[in-house]
Amino acid sequence: MGAQQVRDVFVDLYGAEPEGVWSAPGRVNLIGEHTDYNDGFVMPFALPHVTTAAVSRRTDGVLRLHSADVDGGVVELALDALAPGSDRNWTAYPAGVVWALRETGHTVTGADIHLSSTVPTGAGLSSSAALEVVVALALDDLYELGLKRWQLARLCQRAENVYVGAPTGIMDQTASACCQAGHALFLDTRDLSQKQIPFDLAAEGLRLLVVDTQVKHAHSGGEYGKRRAGCEKGAALLGVDALRDVPYEGLDEALARLGDEEEVRRLVRHIVTENHRVERVVSLLESGDTRAIGPVLTEGHASLRDDFRVSAPELDLVVDAALSAGALGARMTGGGFGGSAIVLVEATDVETVTKAVTEAFAAADFTAPRVFEAVPSAGARRVS
Ligand code: ADP
Ligand code: MG
Image (cartoon, rainbow, N blue to C red; front, side, top):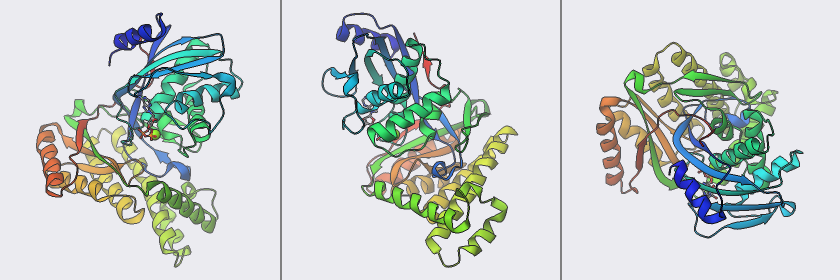
């Protein structure tokens, strides 16, 4: 949906032109999975899919919210009544951002917001971060708060962790706030230092497909907690602050020290090799060897499947079918147990690979996947 349409609906809802229109993208993680809560490296890029928000300030302590993507009318909230955990609806995301801004001491006296999104929700593409970041950026602009992009990301993470109550890392919000078109973002989740890495697929005759399996296996929440706890146990047994501190060169020695802690050994091996894979992808892209990242992505999938054990039959099938049909590399992306996979292909192979994946899903009696092309796109911005 274009900015003008979002503007027009805003006028219909609130009876005046908005002060401006902003947008923030969803994201895909190229490599670096489950490393964020181990102080490690991640490497997301922004999707062309965005959440767009038309916003005006108010002075009376009222927040009015409307989403084109949710049934129901305008929701009106009093700023003074905003409290973590008080809202179980979609409105908790934007309200959480306003709460986090005010709690940090910023003056926000109200807002009228209408938003509309092209980011698929619940597909592991981070529609929640797009929603938070677009609201944070709009309010930062209108209230002249002067926040840096990484500060906006932190505030949005706080909104999601504390207000919404979802224990997520910093990657999604940073990607939505900081990514640049034609680049992937190399982010160190320990100190939030970041570097834009050239990732212009089209210029190299390559494409990156996102395959949304449209499944989410029910036990994902509990399994996430178990992986986190296992990683913490590994760090404690090895005497480091976080698994990020185990060097790749010291992996064999670390595994030997873990003795018969078989599960912890597997988790540690994934995290240490995954951080190393992120660094390998960075150096391959920086030296212009984009095709060579394919096998690294595929290795990452094997590690998530066999060591970290967060894949799903649907994700494994995407990877196997795509590779058999000539893809350069493929992996699950996001937390796992469903959601999406990414596939790196020659531009000339897009149709063959898409067909192979779709047919494999039909043969396995799985729900038909949604396949689309991901062009590394711009981060959050004002659009009018
Ligand atoms: P993901 O971030 O992977 O898409 P989440 O479960 O983290 O999945 O966030 C999805 C939730 O975010 C939705 O259930 C909804 O509450 C909220 N959300 C995202 N986009 C919108 C939107 N455009 N309008 C209203 N709510 C949205
Ligand atoms: Mg999310």
